[in-house]
Image (cartoon, rainbow, N blue to C red):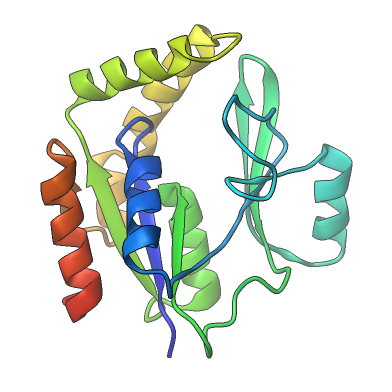
Amino acid sequence: MGKIYYLMGKSSSGKDTLYKELLLMFPALKTLVPYTTRPIRAGETNGVEYYFVSDEELEKYDVAGKIVEKRTYNTVYGEWKYATIEDGQVDLEESDYLVMGTLESYRNMKRYYGADRIVPIYIEVEDGERLSRALERERRQQTPKYEEMCRRFLADQKDFSEENLQCAGITKRYYNNDKIQCLEEITGEIRYGKF
């Protein structure tokens, strides 16, 4: 029976870096590429981090009953939608998966695939460090969106509140103050099935 290892945490907690490292360490893990209507960022590739689609394309999946979960965020640039689509990427009878997303997405995927199939990996970083990382990342963008960066930071404080974490059944935290130590803890648990 396959598992979905679900990596999540507030923005700029280091999820992307940990995700890439884990895929190198566990090449047998399959990935699930989510869909979004937000603009592509510098350094992203369509079909790698996300499938970048229009609102109309996402609506077609909805009408066809292919939406596993969908979220809409009211950003300073308008509505951005994110979704997981039942498009043949997941076969839990054949493979294990590494997925990255939000707490809301995790809860919805847990409902869809079953709690026994989803393993939460919640990454945590001190807020000042996260803000510093977010600012540095935004500065590297061709057109920095500082206002949106601040909105996301504040939204994550609510989305990943202690109450929401408890409601989602998140009890274990992986502290990413030291990437190597954090990675060792996560890989040990994946490798030896300590979940």
